[in-house]
Image (tube, rainbow, N blue to C red; front, side, top):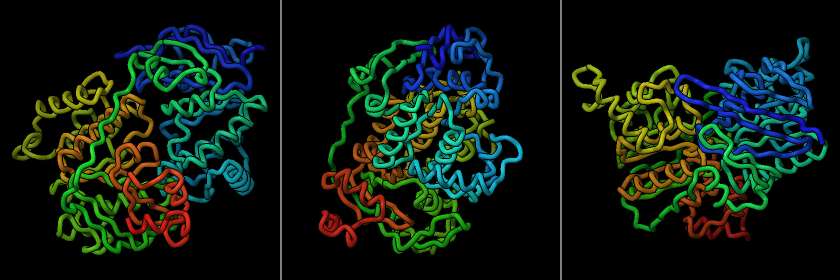
Amino acid sequence: MSPRLALQQITKQYPAVVANDAVDLTVLPGEIHAVLGENGAGKSTLMKIIYGVVRPDMGRLYWNGQETLIASPSAARELGIGMVFQHFSLFDTLTVAENIALGLPGGTRLDELARRITETAHQYGLDLEPQRHVHTLSVGERQRVEIVRALLGKPQLLILDEPTSVLTPQAVQRLFDTLRQLAAEGCSILYISHKLDEIRALCQTCTVMRAGKVSGVCDPRNESAASLSRMMTGAEPPALQHRDQQPGKAILTVRNLSLPRAHPYATELNHIHFDVRAGEILGVAGVSGNGQQELLAVLSGEDTRARNDAILLDTLPIGRRSTAWRRARGIGIVPEERLGRGAVPELSLAQNILLSHQGGATVRHGMVRRKALLALAGDIIARFGVRASGPMAAAASLSGGNLQKYIIGREITRKPRLLLVAQPTWGVDVSAAARIRAELLALRDSGCALLVISEELDELFEISDRLVVIAKGKVSPSVSRAEATRDQIGQWMSGLWPQEAAGTGGQAYAQA
């Protein structure tokens, strides 16, 4: 069988790093082929070469047996290559339909396109509203736009970069069924994921990359998660130590928090109650777009429309207080959007320290202490294993996973009393995710109160002491991790808890 795609000795070098070093890759028609590697291993660069975003310095690319130069994404789409990027390529001020229309031939009717978007999204279980502006979408909803845009092109090769990071377990299985059907129809799929269990369940072939080179090719169905991890990093990820401990007093108290929509497509928050106590992690599960973005905004001080007494820090009402005021009182914040919110892309890693560190160590008498910034940035890079050329590297130059490690490290080094985290390991490789989770647990053990919003159920069960679910702007009763089950939490994620879930264990959870 002639390969759908064949790469031979692909090499791409940047000033500070060789991103791809003589890489070979072969993908057959109808094959689901995984590309696995640590953050910074060269996977994204290789995919961008295939999609025409980046040109290789050396090597050859063959498409359906013919040597081909893919000069641009539009040329890739004409060949039948679709791609879903980890960092989204969407225009905030345009609607979903308008963004998707940009990649289609001129003269495409928006009303007809909106109908196709709705049908395709429904078929694959990826709910979308074509008329919504992208700036109103959560990270998870933006990823759905990218997936639907790629599927609308009916590609011969579909490249997916971390496609399940915002899906429920049920939606993941539905997507897998769709991908298997596409493969059965002859579409080849390049699948990038850090979820080893997904790769073993879905893919027939796996190419493993390490430091820009191919370190192995295998059938992942015959491998264990541990053996794949060893191929990827040379070692297995460290086991987490989650020790039960008695939490302290409530640091954050939320009482009857309700908030109208900030815009027509926002999620209204309704009668939300919960506490986060010193020395515990409260995990917040839910499908993207159910109010997580709005909840983090109101807790962090980005949105100050709440009643002042709806949110208490210790016993102090803070509903109307600014983000700067809350940071000064010991609240750390890791937003879900890395570039633009978590970090300023054009600034260096050292300069980005100033987004959260503005005390005497970094700023004195109104003057920025440059040496202190460089030292602190260097410490974070070393402690969290961030792959970067140094403290002066621009934030935009880092891979998504490495930038996430840096932002998490920046907040943890502040030693906050309360840490609000959204999607802590989104797009982060296995070993880096284990490191981040271990750091969050260590912070919890030191007495910090943590609220972790994540769509990764496995992650929440691994690190949380208690769990709540957010669905349609409402928050469920809390349940201890020891009493919760994945099936129950998955059911709650569709809005079914105690009253509606009577007879399935929900009432017991309501009393937990």
